[in-house]
Length: 531
Image 1 (cartoon, rainbow, N blue to C red):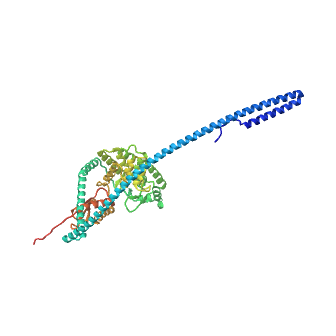
Image 2 (image 1 turned 30 degrees about the vertical axis):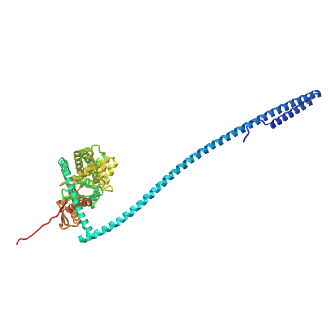
Image 3 (image 1 turned 180 degrees about the vertical axis):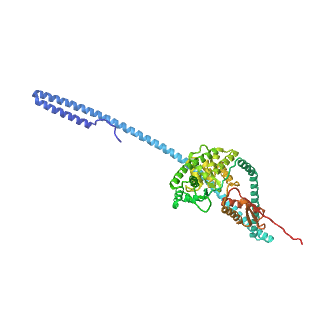
C-alpha cells in the first residue's frame, strides 16, 4: 500500500543543512584569508552560531515532518481498512442475494421437474392407450381385408367376371363418358362463340370492306417494251453487241431479244432497276440515237427521275392514310413498294388498303384510329429492302421502325402481323386481320398453281392421317375440307373432337390466307332390294 506524499523526508533535510553549513564554513574561510585575524575570529564565531541555529531549526522541522508523516500514514491505513471492510460487506451482501436467487431458481426447477414427471406419466399412459388402439385397428383392418377378399371372390363368382375384366369395363365406360362430355363441351363452346362473335365480326368486317375499295394489278415478273419495227432490235444490240452490253451493265437488267415480234423483254429481280431500264429503253427507241454515251446519259437522268417519283409515291400514299408526320426517309422507302408486287397485288396499294382497313376496324372497336392506320400502312415496309438487306421482310421492317423511333405498338404490329411474335395490343391484332382481309379477298391476289395444289394436298393429307377417316376432300379452292369417317369406328361425339383436332393441326402446320372450314361427316345407310 503506498504512503501519502509528505514532501522532503528528514534525511534529505539533514543533508541539506550539512551542505549549507559547509558552504558557510568555506565562505568564512575565504573571508578569513582577507580580513584581519580579529575579524576572522568574530566571523567564525558568528558562523558557528548561525550554523548551530540552522541545525537546530532543521532538527525541529525534521521532527515536525516526521510527526506529520506518521499521522498521514495512520489516516491512510485507516481509510484503506474502512474501504476493504466496505468491499467485504458489499461482497457478502451480493453473495447473500445470489444465494437467495439460486435458492428460488432451485425451487422453480423442483416445481418444473414435478410437472414434467406428471406429464411424462400422462404421455406414457396415452402412448399405452394408442398402442392398444393401434393393435385393435390392425386387427380390424385384417378382418376387413379378409372380408373384402371374400366379397371380391363372391362378386366374381356371381358376375362370372374377373377383377381385371371389371376394370376394363369401367375404364371403357368412363372413356366413352369423358369423350361424350368433351364433345359436348367443345360443341357448346363453339356454338356460344359463334353466336356471340360471328354476327359482330361480320358487321365490323362488312362495314370496313364496304367503305374501302381498291384496284388490283397483275404481278410483273418481267417488263415488255414495244418496238416500232423489227429493225430496232439490231440497233439496240449495236455493233458487236456494245449497246446491249452497256445497257445491261448500267441498269443491272437482262435484255431478252427473241422471236417475239416488235417487242423486247427486260428481266431483273429488282423492280426499280427494271423500271429505270424500261424508261431508258423507251426513250432510246423514241429518240433513235442509240450508243453507249447516250445510254449512260439517259440511265443517270432516269435514276434521278425514278428517285423523285419514289418520293412522290411514298408521300402520296402516306397522305392518303393520314400519316402526315411520317419520317421522310420512311416515306421514300414506302414509295419503292409502288414497283413491288406480291401474287399480282401491288404492295404499296396493299399497304394503303391495310392501313385504311385497320383504321376502320379500330374505329368500330373504339381504338386509336390514326395509330392503327399508321401501323397498317407500315406493316410491309420491309419488302422494299428485302432484295438488298438480308432477312425476312418482317425482321427488316421491325428494325426500320425501331431505327426511326416509331411507336412500340407499331413495332409490335409489324413484327406480329405474320405471327412471328405474339401481338401485345389490339391494334396489332387488327393489322394482322386487315392484312388477311386485303390479301385474301377475291381478286386481290393470284397464287401460283404449284402453291395452290400443294395446299390442297396438305389439307387432304392432314385429314387422312387420323384413325377412322375414310376419305378427305379439299373444296372451294382450299377454303373447306370435308372429311368422311367410318361410322363403325367413330361415333357422333368423337367426330366433334376429330374436327377440333384437325382444325388445330391445320392452324399449326399450314400457312394460308383467310379461313379454312373443317366439316366431318358420319353417315349410316341401310339398303335393301325389293324383289
